Length: 517
Image (cartoon, rainbow, N blue to C red):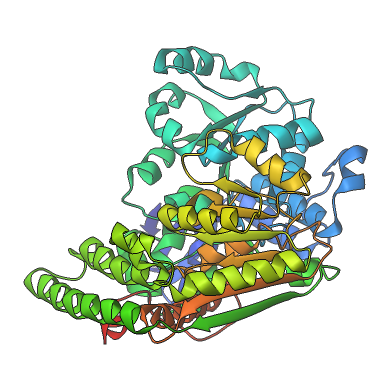
């Protein structure tokens, strides 16, 4: 609400969320004063005390399990909830975000039904964690046909927690429309990073007293992704989308200061000093003449087609076609057989495959358990053949794997299974694979955060062995350029979320041009 007072000053009456969001912007304005409700004064007073939340009661059973930083995380979320605000729990992968949420829900037991929305593959993980740590909670997982789910959701008030997936929440949205949840929690909240997606628009209509987001990668490509998540958490906190683009796009420092109270991020280095070292290496390999000749021929063709299509339309409108063209180059770096099956009959067509075979045999001789990631399931099938030829037992996981839990359990518990082949998309989150101590990233991805999530399947709480990470890169190719672009994205992430003051733009047409040069 706004009005003009007797001194011709613009008076803004703001809720705590709006007040905090606009306070910095308004303090230097001579003709503006702020009126807030009493809860804002209480909030300000609360922040001056040593204990953000008085009377947060975590059960003695959980207190025995929770580390100090996790108890702090629960207190922080309780503080936000008390004053009607939301936030992002952005702890590094492996620091126990799920456990902190369950402790929070336990503290609020009996205050209403909460909902967790997560990727489909994590529903069982959440259920198992509930049964392990807070078995007193009554859990609903809507499943079956649309009619069956509707019938189940009609009784959700009888439950403490509803666990559902991003795809299902879109389909069942109408069934939730009349209900107000105690907590609405998004796991892997980067699923709503695109504000124009149907998923983001759907989820933002859910009603809840408190909204929270969990993600180790709160921003992957651009600052607008953060705006979308906060638009879910506290609509209006970062102003409108248009105003956000005008005021924050070139000001990462300002954005970082604005969101600082509403994002809790702890790293494994800080919180788990007992973790063994993580050693990362880039292993380069060079193509022989035949593979290189094929690569250069495709590069010339791709360069011409990409430049033509962007010239006729625009980079934004042709982004998918451009990335598809670049994918052919990346596939040749892995194995020419990915674009022409005739090359699969040849044993000497992939320099990287030869490097992989040497590395995997060394790892087996050293007694290691290894995770191998690739974006291409067709490449994983080729790697499986190499393992079979070398009599190495392995597990396999991609988006089509039917019994995910059984596959994971087999790798974790069977000492004879030494290698786990995993598609980056299917295995980048929701897995605890500390039985392994070696990670091979067979091909680089544009987004370094996806790679970090993959590595964190191994390097997390419970790991007691040094972890070796190998990135396999074909020298002098598009893969080298991808490593450079990854660093730019890391700089962007650090500029807003971390402590780095340098700001780098997200992936642009100029970046793509450099890849093709």
